[in-house]
Amino acid sequence: MTTPFEPPAPPPLRPAPARPGRKLGPIAEELSSAHRAWLGPMRETYLTSGLTLSELSARVRLAKSKISELLRGIGLYPRWEIIFSLSRELNMPYWPLYRLWRQAALEAHKSREWVERCSEKTAVTMSHAAPPLDHRAFRELVESFYSLYAQVFLEDEERDTAVSDTFDILWLCWNDALASPDTRKFAWNVLRATVMARTPHVDGRPELGWAAFDTVALQSVIAASDRAEQIEETLDLFKAMSRLPDHQLDVMVLRRLCGITPRTPPAFSVSRWPLCGPTSATPSISWRASSARPRPKGKPHDPSHRRNPLQGPAGPSPHRAPRHRPLLPRKDRGTQPAGEPSTSPASPTRRLKTCGPCAKPSSPTPRHRRDRLRHRPGTPTPQRAGPCLRAAADRHR
Image (cartoon, rainbow, N blue to C red; front, side, top):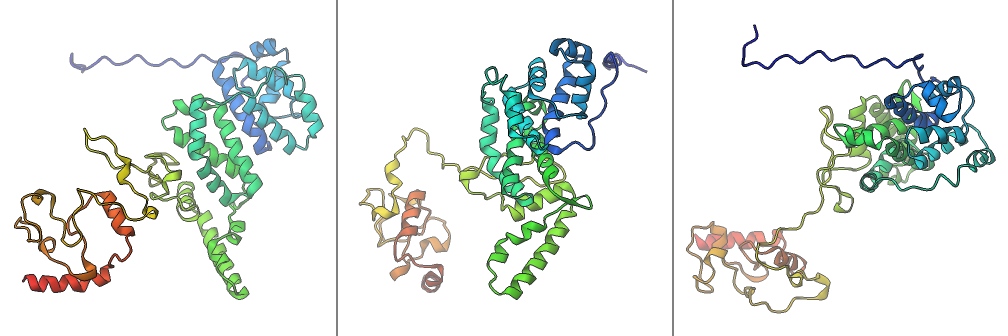
């Protein structure tokens, strides 16, 4: 029974109107990965455009059967004039589509003269356009990490081609990537599909055997017998890794083989930007950006206190305590005579006097002073300071 406090049930959703004409068939299974790289985005753009084959045929002046064969990937490899006319009607960017089409044509054993003849008529209308600003920013952030991941499965030339194709595909479907729940995960799926399409597979799993000959452990071994044993051990390890599920395999590759950890150097880091995006099956693989220490409000930034240790010792500062006595806690400064122990309820180690080379400030000091003390020659090590502190503790008792 429906009460007045319950909202009325929404009307049932009507199914989307069926596209008139014959349904477009699937993509041919024997199609190469390079051909699928540009055909997949074009096919999805056509299906979401609402156009029919008859309407598209009237606009580009091409038979419906030819367009259907082109969108299914059967028949002869299409010329660029046809692809260019279709992309213009579907509002697709020309430049990434041309690069993907050219790469697939060369892999389909088309000569470079044939490629140039196909594109010479559209060279004037097709100019080198820049990708969207957010796409360029995203590429600058993750391209180096994408290359590290692809290098585990592919050689250098194949790696560069796979990463370049990944960002071209993202350019073609960038609006879909931005509209997805997680742009990072969308882009990672494109990268993984592109890399795995070029990776040799054994029993349905990616082959990592060749990477066993390019490891740090193998380069550190000199004896020939030890090298053979190391290669055999690494091959067994990589073979076991290749049997992992997709998410776990990506985590092992990124963390163990690529060295991407939460403490990645700040020069290659992005704050709260995991590579794969948050998933329930994988831990968050993120790297943090270096953050400057916040300055107190009302005080201007003075870079003079950050002194390079190579410039020598800094000059005397009125805010710096002499080295012959420990620095008093902040709350006791100005109220306690110099050289006398503090009477504040602090820990006993703060009131201890140290001797000889073990003397050092016993209270927290600003960061720039700690940096200078850390680089100052003659700073005692914990092993040398330990006995002195224990002796001072006995005297204090």
